[in-house]
Amino acid sequence: TEFQRDRARIIHSRAFRRLEYKTQVFLNGTADHLRTRLTHTFEVASISRTIARALALNEDLAEAIALAHDLGHSPFGHSGEEMLAECMREHGGFEHNRQSLRVVELLEHPYPDFPGLNLTCEVLEGLRKHRDLARLARVSNLRSNEESKLQTCCTLEADLADEITYYSHDLDDALDFAILDTDQLDDSAIWQRSHERVARRHRNLSGAELHKNTIRDIIDLQVRDVVATSAAAIAAVAPADLERAQGQSAPLIRHSEESEVANGELRKFLYENVYYHPRVAEVNRRACQMLRAVFVAYLEEPERLGDATARRIEDEGLHRTVCDYIAGMTDRYLLEEHARLASQS
Image (tube, rainbow, N blue to C red):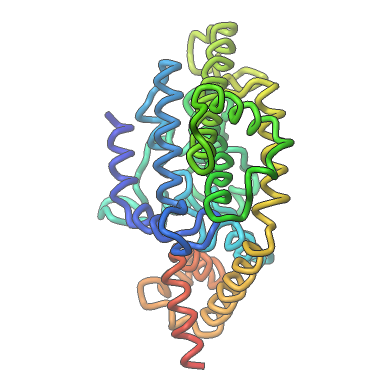
């Protein structure tokens, strides 16, 4: 099918392969079992397919959107994204979802007959999640600037799967990496509910085994909640066609209100205790200093970009060309490039 073709083109792209060496939350290479952008992407794709199958939606479409959703992520995770956005503040900005569209529509060029990966409109629509399209039009000027209708069944599974995966697995990695201990989660409703369920079922579990199974239960309950809530919403509306599905005032694919509240509490907890933890913040601070230094070095000496990249400066402008180039780097490559530039200065 066309969506299976899209999936294959995404998986075989260079940008997809580079996700293996890009940070999720903790700097890539810090420990063997911490998640990277690539493992996160596969986890999102798996949950997207599960939700789509349970709701009798198009599994291949849901998976393709999930596989492409982080192709535009910069090195060093969201901290790297924030630094690139700062570097580009006066030049159109930077945001990784918007960059994913640039990757699949322009920056990847494996085919001689067209730029980008030539993905279907449905997959592109799914990648436009929750963005200001007017701003997108001013910045990218790509064919994905057509009006997006985000309330459709076929574009929201990956969005929710991303959220489920992101917070649950960041919590898992933080516990593994000793950023957190389980005592800090005593006031978390979403953790306590699953922790108690697992403890009742498996009275012999403790320590890491108990926390791993608690994370698994959180994900299971979240997926079941999305499926049950969405199935009820679809049944209530019974949309006869795509236009009817898109015209709803609320998304058809969604969490229950109770789950939304619990997710909000978990999100707040992670920001307060993980994402801004001193150990994480210090590593991110140093990494972002290196990213800025490389950005400035390329602005001052564009010839360092190489001929193929430098040729794009006339069409895209120097800042956007440098931004695209750095956004495509892996953590490892940027660290190596920073060391190389520092040794030559």
